[in-house]
Image (cartoon, rainbow, N blue to C red):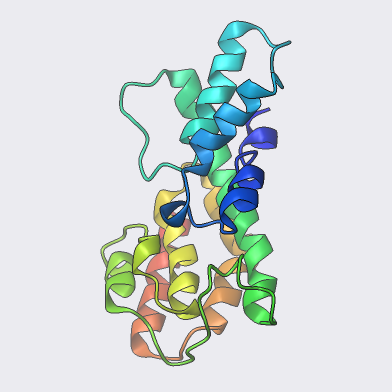
Length: 194
C-alpha cells in the first residue's frame, strides 16, 4: 500500500509548482501523506496499518530516516525507498539516453555536457555516500547520483537488481571514459555485490 501511494504528492506538487524538485517547491513525501489523509484514501485500513503506510509515504524521500521510528515503519519505508530508487532509474535511463525537448521535468532541467562532472558529486561516490541533488550541474552528475544510490539500498535484492537490470552498465556507458569513472564503477559494483 505504501509503495502504491508513496508519490501521491507528486501530482499536486507538479500542478502547483511545475517542478519535481522538492528544494524548489515542497516536500512531496509530506504532501503525499497529507493528500492521502485529506482524500481519506486509507480510511478502511486498521489504524496501526494506516499509520505505518502514511508514515512510509511521508518518510520515503528523506535523506536519512529518524532513529526513533518503529521496526514496522522502518522496514516498510526501507522497502519503499529501495523500490522507488530502482523504479526511478528505470524511468530516467530512457530520458538520459534519448534526450529530447520536453524532457526537462524528469531531468530536473539538467543538460548534457559530455565531458563535465562536478567534483563534489564524484567525491560523494569516492567516499561511499549518496550524492546530493543540489550539487548537480549537468546530466553526468545526475547519472553519478543515480549510481551513488548503491550506498543507500537496504536489501541485497535491491543491490543485485541494479546490476541484473543493466542499470549500472548503462549509466557508466553514458559517462566520460576516464580513470575516475572506471574507479567509481569498480567501487559501485563492489558495493552492490556486498
